[in-house]
Image (cartoon, rainbow, N blue to C red):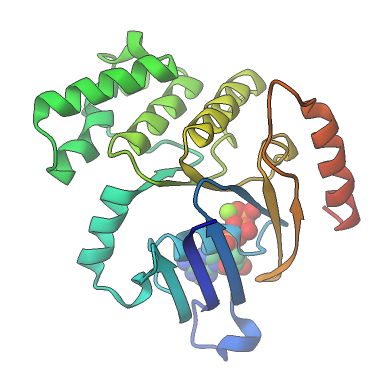
Amino acid sequence: MKIVLEAKALYKSFGKEKEDEAAVLRGINLQIGQGEFVVIMGQSGSGKSTLLYNISGMDRLTRGQVLFDGEDISSLSDDKISKIRLNKMGFIFQHSHLLKTLSIKENIMLPGIKAGKKTRAEVIRDAEELMQRIGIEAIGGHDITKVSGGQLQRAGICRALINSPGIIFGDEPTGALNSGAALEVMKILNDINQNGTTLLVVTHDSKVAARAERVIYLADGKIETEYMLGKYNSEKEDLRERENEMNKWLKQRGF
Ligand SMILES: Nc1ncnc2c1ncn2[C@@H]1O[C@H](COP(=O)(O)OP(=O)(O)OP(=O)(O)O)[C@@H](O)[C@H]1O
Ligand SMILES: [Mg+2]
């Protein structure tokens, strides 16, 4: 399998403290293969979000390396990293952070316009196709304050996909949703992954983790262990069984 993303001996500390002892991330080694769906779990404060931000170039590591498509992005300028993030990565957060002054569709189009690789008409066409696929075509013209949390999150997913990124990073993408809306988002994530997009998702939710193929458990800024579930096949497999296995494993870690 081709490795698309790799952290090598990654350390991150926020203060001036002696980095190896008090660092938030302490020597993370991680490889993500093309097309994988990997979940990061761990107690609150274990460093999950920090890992996601550092491995995706949203934040600067203190020491170590992050290789994206074989390129050491940790040594690139802010400008170059921003370009890579805009063109090759997608981000989904707990709250979608859409702009209030724009409609749903305009929000989805924005990164497509910014990237400057497509005409406005092409961006509109792609945004409409995505909204159709994700089931929010009817609310494209709506104000972002006039839609549900689930619809907003699905709009955030469309926005993350507008530049056809090879990888999507998610930090608690279902964290603010009710169970019905969370299920919709989980299904969309599986669907995106089926279509070849690599996913790296932080979650507290074993229901999300059960849909991944590999779960990494972070404790005190280190990868304690990982669990190989294998790719989820919704036609052949019972999700509840995977979830039960997942919960047993998590319980053993005191989660
Ligand atoms: N910008 C920052 N400045 C200082 N300390 C920070 C900063 N961001 C995170 N930390 C610290 O790093 C540690 C890990 O935080 P992080 O947000 O990565 O945890 P997490 O595993 O995502 O937790 P949660 O499950 O609550 O989201 C915490 O002790 C936190 O206080
Ligand atoms: Mg977090």
